[in-house]
Image 1 (cartoon, rainbow, N blue to C red):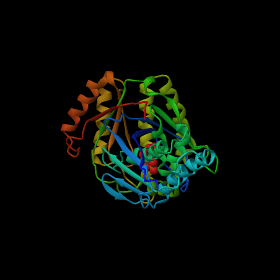
Image 2: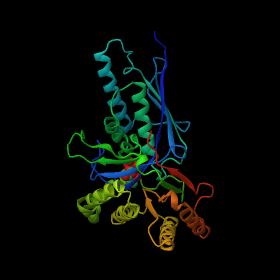
Image 3: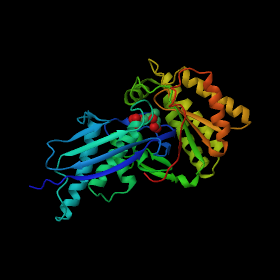
Image 4: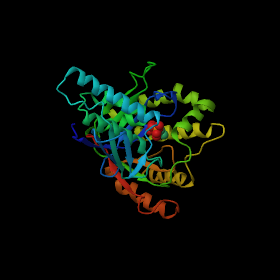
Length: 350
Ligand code: PMV
């Protein structure tokens, strides 16, 4: 029998949303209640490295994450495996000379170089890397937008990590999810001075998973209805214009307002959900102090489903922003030493 081990590796970057995805209209297919926009951050500082292999010598599908066996029985992972296998099987059917990989057990080995599930978008990079690695292994001809539909079923935000630069996830309207996919707003080269400062307020696993947080928000927040009806659609338009026009002040204002709106909806659920903590709020004040001192908006904070802060700024303002934070953080206990000042750029290649 053929005992070849077929193998392909890839890295996938994290993305941090500036207009947030929060809420599912279909939890099974991960179809969102609103569109979103994110920035893809450079892989040197934040990335997942994944190797996918398949062979007759493996006995079953498996996934190792940071050296530990991971459960693959979950519907999300299964959906990714199933979709990618179906795509490979279709190719094999058309071309009989192709090795029959779709039927072989898959072995996935994945490593993050940043805290997993601490609100640093690890699931986004994780599922994007898983999908891209298997797509490479299977030599699928699909475009990043096509692959984003598979990654979306693993973790919603993962669909945006199939692209570099500035990326939109269009919510779509179809029930089968065929139009809920990511596309490119602008490549990284469009705005090369964009930077992200990652402030780790806590590397602990988050308290309320994004899935259950979303479910609770959709079910019990009245404010959320306003968010998806008017606030996010307006923010999507403003943000796309800000990016196209290199308008940092607008980009920053929409980023901060959208983060505030998302966390306000979380606080509006019953019972309330608080992802931000005292350290997060100190970071908000630090950004405000930096902007006040500059006399204009040169820094923008944003928070995902956890206390860690990402601050967007332009490289020309790095002294004011990094210096301002160094001053502010001296007064704040709670930021984890050493991990405090990871700086990432925006990248194109994923
Ligand atoms: O992809 P998920 O299910 O982990 O949800 C991510 C949600 C946020 O990070 C809070 C927002 C976003 O758009 O990434």
